[in-house]
Image (tube, rainbow, N blue to C red; front, side, top):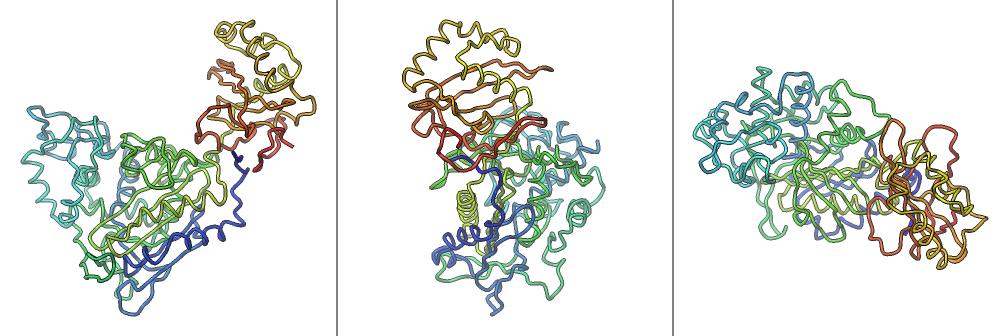
Length: 529
């Protein structure tokens, strides 16, 4: 096992990004769209880009500034607008949705008319049936047409709140709610609240909003894996436009991803557009998505879910990934980012067969692997650090854990009595040999931390190593509620027999204060030398 570096080596990121793009964008991929573009970004800036083909098949080549339709990636902009209005007290996501969208109280599950909320609809757990194919063809339907559908009574495929069903229609009701409380078209509200303030000048809700000289990618379809293409006119922009009509560029989406992803930075200040807390809400799973639906070769997920207008994945190596795909007849798009490193990928293709999602997932995985990105950056509480260092000293000196009773919760010495703990430690040391007296300082031997309340470190021994874990209880004065010692595996960095997990790759930052800390580097030396 390798350890995470202290920082993503930005100086080499562009080279790694170009290599990842080159490895993934083979001829079989590129032939599926007349034009495509893929960009690796870091904290809002494009660091490498690969453009291919002709966006209109008229001889003009794809450029970094070429505008593609981003389809359902639009949902994240709608969700952010809804949360901003929620934060201002204008929109209540947990009130009955029928309060804002007349007729939703007629939705039914069998003989029941369950209570629908905007929160459930925005997180795809409102019970409405999956409707991708239908939604594509009705993107241009009028508000009157959709209002008539609602008034007729919508049958639900599941109890609200119980299951994940991706519903374009359901999320579109957030647009109607926004219009109800603002008295304005939702597209104008999104533009004024987000697009213009963030400088996303190339992002617009309709092709007609660009001037005649704009470099707009046309849409195409292929039914023979890219051997031939048929022009596909833009799907109209109507009542469902708020969930799938936006057009944009890789640079604008890079800015958007950073605006959202930076909410996890400790230094992130609340934005006047949307607070960091609300942006984190968007990127926190609210509805479970079966992992089998997200699986792909070379990637292992521990979980997946839908937040507000965004999908969240828990990657077993890299931790939290945030993403959303977009697909309409003639277009395939995808954005995904890794909040811990600030690295993301944007991919557009002007054919719905292009498979932008698979390309983006592979490229981001390739870049993160090359730079050995941490799965998360954790700064333990000062009390966690101090308690672990103190217990480490007791182990080194062969003294009992009871000598640190002032930092232990009452259960610790009862859960494992002193004689049992002493016997287990003796058995472990019989295998590993005695604790070495020339080990590196404690800070250099810290391995990982699941969160601020936990810390894992290694204790080198003559013939092996011990791996130690503390877990604190979060009180005004945190106390150790669990302490465990295990014989290390061959790497010297994990308990023997423990499966791989994302927390193995958490980078640990020292708490504020006079705590010595040696930056963790890629190494396999359990002695920290």
